[in-house]
Length: 487
Ligand code: SF4
Image (cartoon, rainbow, N blue to C red; front, side):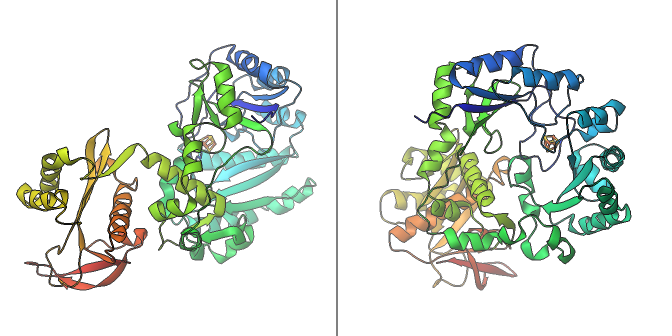
């Protein structure tokens, strides 16, 4: 067992005034933790760690109304350690409380980071509050007037990239470089897409493509050279047999949610990343899990290879830009979220044959007898063309099958994936992709490859390694339809 003795403990004691669309932590409800919970938390960990750096915030700093006392108390509670200020401060408070900037100066703050998402309407929409953009501009002026350097962080995606060029011009018009130089510091403007994590993972469909990053922004783009198109990373790692297992290198850093759930700081607070609950689980057992990094997400991370993650969840056609570790974490989280589902072949659950046939029939308007005939043949071993189901708490939520010909004029292009369907409330979680991979691998293991499918969707199957092959004529249809192939 590793004997790391230094702990950084950040508790969500007051919440956050914002609801940023890119928030990597996810959107927890705001709830003020009860009086004394800070001391209780530190006392709980004291027997196990020689040094404890305690923070009463993990979202917006200084959102507590008595932020001066709060800062003092964080220092007093810390054990053989002192909390730091970093470049984080509350712009919400800066524009509402004249004394706050004086407090920042007293605590030695030299630079404060402010986050934009474009111009006024876009920034307000992304922060989740009208007025946020104007507050950020006002906060910039307040900081400069008080000798503190502003630093503008800007989040980019496909929909706001042009606005960010305008924002850069705005920074020039407001002479922020010169004004910051006048207080003996340097103005920084930097752009990035953020880790594809927490709320920001929802923005995956509009994540910036590397070739779409405006040229004017490249000098300001954070680690531009280390950003790669998703397709390139997929190609590079598709056969990798190593695992991606995040861990704390130095200090152990823990987040305490306002319901006392405990997490490592690696990623968002998804249930599979939960270490336990400080009110319900014995502290000795929690410390064991912390030291041994023994939680469901990390156990799974040690089991599944990067190659498997890429083949299951990677989009081999996507030009979206990612840094390597961000992309690995995105893939791992996709896998963990999909993990609440179970994927089976009909041979694993033969008793569900009638139910599955009725489900497909309802979705596609084809008589269930037609499905039953194919399923019977598969279950009896007369055919290797299988049926695959995604289950959520045993409810069928996704499915597909394999048949010789999905009703078109090219019988030579066989076999065909058919009847791909996912319930609406379960879409966007990669279920169909998972079933497609399962079917392709299953058929390949029986010597059947390539596999084909017909679809009018453009862009969906490409994500999972399918390629457009040609147009075919569907039976009884008046237009040609697209034929895809997976080798
Ligand atoms: S990104 Fe920061 S300020 Fe925005 S919602 Fe998340 S914690 Fe609050």
